[in-house]
Figure 1 (cartoon, rainbow, N blue to C red):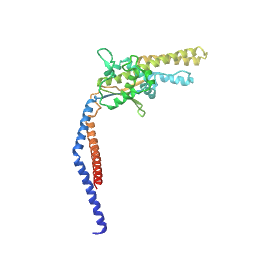
Figure 2: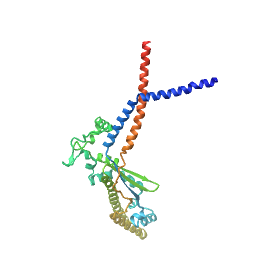
Figure 3: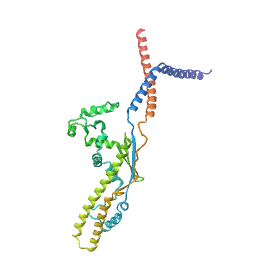
Figure 4: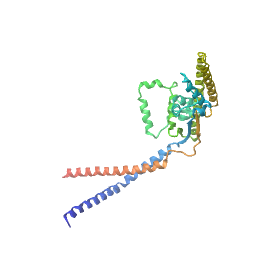
Length: 333
């Protein structure tokens, strides 16, 4: 046996000994590791069962072009281009996807939805007294298994004095700003630039309410854009009628008459509302299955993590025990 072989044999033996020592530590602490895994798994099961089922409903819309939305809106666009444009004139009936997305995310639309469909008692059902038709004075006193909820309450208790300016008028119950934030967390707006489409997605505990919330968004968006189109058309018409009396050129007068007719047409199209500014490609439907919580995945993941943590703690405890034993031996010697 050469010198090189003699040097290599102890290395392999040392590796085998180390692996065996690792296994002995795990086997020695097996009850601790198993107990920790079981406790974590049971805790995860209890927590997952305490979480409500969340359902998802969505709708896909696409903006309508000027020709699609206002019938002869394209003719008015050409007339404006030929005329060179008039200050203060805007053609309603054709909206960009960015404008619709910003409107869907706006506070004004959320507030309209909350007030029009009286969603506050639904969104904050824990704080609503259905019998008395009012807010509970004690607020939400339910016990939560989520520690972050208590952190939020603790931070709210130590908030600055400036926050007192936004207190509720009655001293309890959520206000409209709470509803706007709550609705913003439930509904997500995604803009697909490539396909020029907008997805309105809601996630809530009740499947029927989830689908209705998306419908509320579509209905309120349609009404808002239609009313704005009529308002702008009326302003434009008054402006054009004023400009009509200032010019004596028959050619310019004829073009102004055409644009006035277009504003009247736009106002009439806004009354119809159907496919005025956007088309619904995929309407919302009541979901039949939940999307979360994924309880089985949560339990399996928590079990795996708990086992790894248990093994790590087992080696740590073994290290502490060896350190104490060495200290005792040094003291005795």
